[in-house]
Image 1 (cartoon, rainbow over the protein chains, first blue to last red):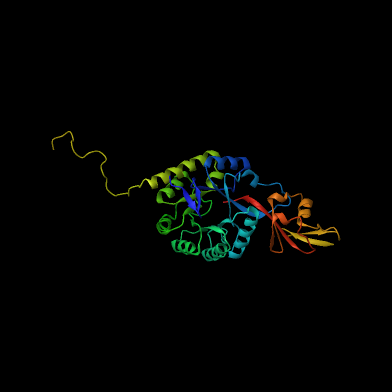
Image 2: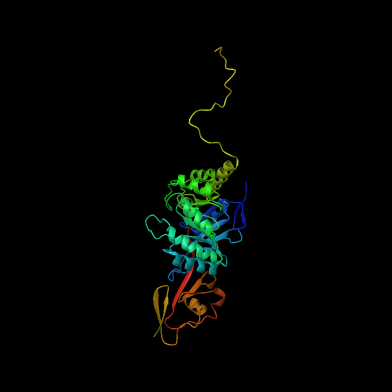
Length: 257
Length: 70
């Protein structure tokens, strides 16, 4: 399989893992290991002064995984830029998953504020991976301001609905010159495989793994699905047709006419 | 009384007992500095500067860290 290249950095795995919602740090660490992932997202929040020993970073082996902080919770560009800068100060790395989601019910990203924040962050030297609705025009505009990828959603975050945005995702994949990471809403390994067969460069999965009864096993399932989907894509799949096309010879039947 | 606003909550200190630096504040709160980033009145304070960054009465301090997220 081809390597995934983002901002000049090579990755063998095409599966990003989100670290939210795991029942324990141990389950998270096991899932990360089994998924084969190399890119792991985290969020930035206020320290809970009453419960200060909750330190999940210690469960993520930073020699194995690239930490990708997100700007979740940001409602506009200004808040997103602030979070990105805090995250950079915390990690010493300048990669950020840009999320601006003012709508609390569907968590759909704000395209105007996302583009605004992306421009500011790119100019400030960040490697920006923006989370967006499956909007091909926006994807192009983000690419033009210098984002390292685009991360269109398959369906609302955590909804497990799969590739509801198929048609527009296909357009984004067709037109993009940066890697397309399908993010959000992938509920089953088959959804991930489907996205990879379509030509997505990578997928991000969190809820489907973290909330499974056996997160480690589900992580393995997603790993295999992403690999299978990518292999199929690189193998040059043939288009569907309405009519049958015989697999067995149409000659030499055991009859006279 | 002196006061610091820490993560949105006002914390009062008897006069003269305000922690003198970010490092001292973290120690009082029993928070390991290695996992935290601080912001004072909107300015990011890098971890290596915790020991030298003085605190003053009335400042607003954010202490943040990474949590699980997608």
